[in-house]
Structure formats: C-alpha cells, structure tokens
Length: 484
Image (cartoon, rainbow, N blue to C red; front, side, top):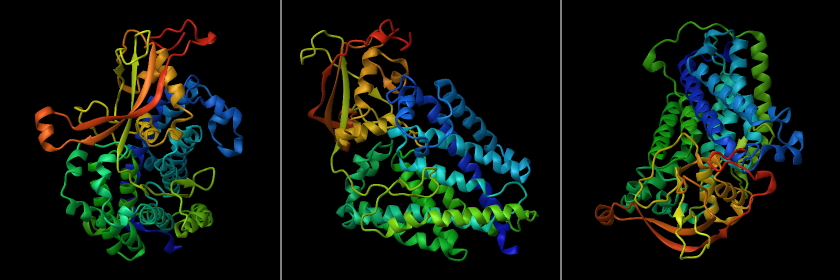
C-alpha cells in the first residue's frame, strides 16, 4: 500500500524519537530518586496499602504481580537503561519487531509506575507521556518508512493537547478573556523559574500580547496541523517557539518539552535535507497492526473529543486504565495571590512562639526570600508541586501532609533527601508546624537594596505544632538513617 508510508518524514521520526527517549530518561530518573520517600514501603503513601484496597483492573501493571522497594528501583533503573539505549539509536539496529518491542518496554515500565503513583503522579504530563509513548511503539524504526497513520495520530494528540488547553482557559477564568492573566501568572505559577521575576515585571501591554499570542497558538494554529505542507510545518514551528517561551518563564516538568517533541514530528525537513534515504516498504503484518491501532485510538478518542466540545470540559483526565487516549489542559483558573506553606521545626520542649523555630528548605518552591528560583524542568519535583496545591487548599494535602510531617519528626533519611535544607542535621525536631505566607515578587529597587527576590507576609496557621511519639514498631530507629 503506497499510501501507508511517508518516506519524507524519516528525519522527523528520528528527532521525535530521540527527544522522547530523553524525556523517558528524565521521567524514570525522577521516579528512581524520589519513590522511597513518596510511595515506598515506608513512604508517605505506601504502594502496598494502595494495592490492598484497589482492584487489579482499576490500575493494571507490573506491581500487581509483586511489589518491593527493591523491585520498584529495578523497574525505574531499567527504564533509565532502556531510555539511554533508545537515545543511542539501538532500536534502529534491530529488526522492525525488535525495535517495536524495545519502544514498548519503557511504556510498560512507566505505566506500571504511574498506576501506583497516587497523588504524586496525578499530573497531566504523566498521561501525555504514556499516550505519546504508546504511539511511538508503532512509528517504526531503522530503514522502515514511517507510517502516515501514526504521524496523523501524533498530530491528533498535539491538537487535543493545545486546543484543549486553549478551550479550558476561555471557558474558565475571565482574565484569559480580558487578556490580564499574565499580570499574575508569572508570580503565582506552581514553581517559578530563574527568569520568572523578570517576566513578571514586563510592561502590562507585553502581558496582553503574551495572552493574545497564546490564544492564537492554542485556539487557531492547531487546526493548521491538518493542512498541507509547508503550512503544517509553520504551525508546528510556531508551537515550538511558544513552548520555548514557557520553558524560559517557569518549571513545568516535561510538559513543554514533550509538546515540542510532538510538534517536531509534524515538520517536513526535506526542504533542508533533500531527498530521504532509501527506505524499505513495511511488511504486511506491520500494516495490519498499525491500522488496528489507529482504529482503536479513533474509537477511544470519542470521549476525549466529546469533552472538548462540552461546556463542562474537564482537563487532565484518562478515560481508560491504560492512559491510551486522554484529555488535557492547564490553568483554567489563575491564582491572584501566591500562598506558600512554610514548614518549621523546633528542638525546644515547649512549642510556643518563644521557641526557636527553624525553617525547612525545599528545592524548587519559594522559601528563603533571597533565594533566586531555579530551573529544574524537565525534572519533576513532585513534593514541591504538591506543596503548591496544599497552599491553595488543605484538601489537596489531606492524604499526605500528616505522614510527611511525621517523617520529619522521625528524621527519615529518604524524606529529607527531597529537601534542599534540613535545619536539624544532628537529631530530628521535637515539634513541627506549618504556616501559610503570602509571597510577592519584590520590585527592582528592593532587589538591589536587600537582595530579596520575594516579600512575604504571614497569613494563617496551616498545621498546629505536632509531636508524635514513635509507635512501638518504630522504636529503636536510627534517626539519622530512617531505618532500623
């Protein structure tokens, strides 16, 4: 079937696949380095407890067969190794079926991780990585010509990602319609970056232009993805530029980079590279598999497509347990005020205002007012992101904040590794409390005179001082290591 192959997109496929492999590597590395404190056997939300109370069909994966921290670590580090192999192009050295199996391996491994990740893995970019990774399995490798059907499915995914994000904004906060959201967003976004202070202080007319350009890119440009070249390539290039602007202005894990990867798969590089190399026609079995997968994705697209047209549009939701076709969106509403939960401890026996309270420092979220926000994306600091949600409403923290503070009281090593600063290096505190502060970017004058990037004002108590006696099974713990 001559229509099945798109030889001219061989370079688009290669760029997309290598970029996706790098994102896989970051995702697995994030899981390997953070899981023990978050979801390990002694973690804040232990996986074994989740497995006991949920049915297999609700979240199928490898950990339904067996779970231990050692096995989870093996899965995560194996994912890192496979990602490195894909970055190096090992898939192109294998026969077609072998390359497909190699691409299927990180998808299965990461799906298993997401299925047990609970609130720590409830972000839209987790499903986006799984949906993209699933399609990548069927994109072909080596000298086999890329299948046009999978290329169109990647465009359909990119369309839903961008158009869904644009619709949720227009249907949500009125500041998007008034072009005023960026008067606040750079300051109140979940995790500002090193340039966010500068973006926030751009003139307000520039903010209006930013919002208007965002609406054009998300509401109009996505339709151009389905037009002939070179219009489709120009549309994709515009999306890449918009995503790079977002990369500069904040930290959104791998959301922006994965969107860029999808957009790069749309670009026709033949005007720059000339004729493609000689590629082999795909075998019949491969054509049958790709056609079947395309039909499956189209059927599963019904509910996400209906959601796009609904006045009650929801964002970042999976409609099937394997996250094959999902709905996306971001910032349907914008916070006007930046609230931060500041966690403190004291070694004093009496937890009153006369006690010496010392502040725990987080890696990404604002804390010390003189600390410039740092760039972490595409790496995902899961605890820091959830702390932002906790400041919006205690309901977001109900399941995990208590266990988190308990581990601070225990001096748990794995939990403390998630933090940038432990004010109690010798012994854990006697009490821990949490308070809410209002953070605002300083102006240029105050930055010059004090070196402070933020002003902060006390708002309210988040959690009263707690000091929990060690339960019997934890007596005798080595507080420096968090293990017996």
